[in-house]
Image 1 (spheres, rainbow over the protein chains, first blue to last red):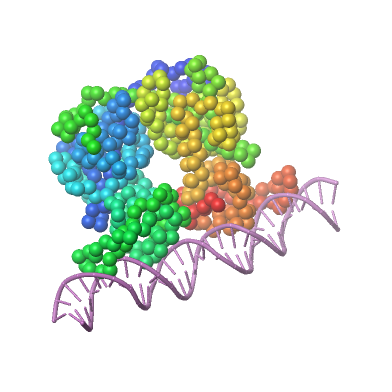
Image 2: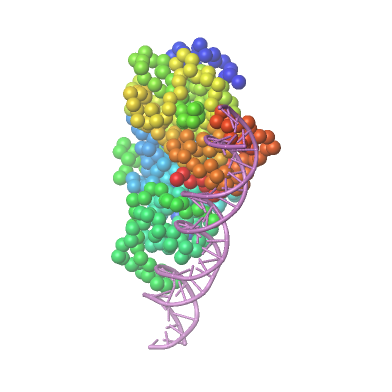
Length: 243
Length: 243
DNA sequence: CCAGTTGTAGTCACAGTGACCAGAACCGCG
DNA sequence: CGCGGTTCTGGTCACTGTGACTACAACTGG
């Protein structure tokens, strides 16, 4: 029951002995949508012994830097992605003592969502991968414990689409409801009925706000679609449950 | 747009310079239900300059210790609570550079839920507080940034009761549906209709499993209630939304 | 036995949703 | 120009889940 090596009386003393100052890092799982598919940003680590492996962009935390700043810096330095407006939220912290073979590193994982960036990430050592590829780990080797972080990030995104207005973080403003629907379809991996989706979105208060603009039809033709902007709603009431 | 003091070329080098190894701590927000009210465990910090203040039980992470182990150790050492079966989950990590005046400490906050423990926590420097007291911070001084962690913990518990079977973590097995209902009422702070609550719980697959035992009526009398055990469901489909 | 309390079962109206269908507004082509 | 093909938008209908409520069951103490 009780923890070995400690007693209640010893606990009263200020505990500075036997306490390590481990390194703290931030790893970012950046998701975006490209070609109608959900994509994950991965980079090749610096370490020569990890050649051929891929990893989430991550940086160690500097002493004067907030965790959010470290996340932004990791994206900027490792993938040249500067998106100060991107949605960024903590996922969870991975602190297993053996997760990094080079020593004790506690990693704060972040989830980032952006509209498709202008392809600056395909430079040097950063690429977007289809999440289906990563999920089955088909030949793709993920470094450290990032194969545990990635599924958590994807599941977080999938579930947050249900009860928050987070889907709008994937599209540039203004957007059509079809674009927003394709976000849900890509993240959830299921087709949705356009009419029911529309009814649900416009009936949810402050999810999106209508503009008077029209979007030109795509290459397939079709009726022009109204353009919308993000509403001020954070949570959706009631939620939009996946089928 | 770009991060000051860093360039893309500098990023390729292995970055060991300018990186701090900050201290990592775990703080635990333990919630339980006593006298029909939601209670939060707080302790008096060791530091003499924090006399009169209260804080979440927290410990620094040792180098061979997982974060979960540190959370259990914090509860054991600071409040003599040894509950290996208690529900424990990460809340989020607080890493603002100025959150601890004594230096850079990154804190991984945990949420813990237990059935009412046998009052061992009222010893030396640990007490349960009504969350209403803490919420309004009525004369209660919370150390560090724990006044930010506590509302996050309470809100997490409230929302997780909606879409997970977590309410059963607050009651000892076997339990009656009235006990389970009082969990929801205490955490959400609203009364629920007994009949509708019952219909909802038993119709949700694998939320609870019926036994053939009966619980004796309480001091107010009344019909004996059937006893139930936790089902194997983790998530509730559909969710039990708060009114 | 009776009033009070709690647990359990059922009824009714209503909101939200999935599965459709139909029309509106564009496209390219003959 | 008409016409089929496509997408967007509005509507109907059946069904589910829920809130409000009533009724009954099974115990208590006086």
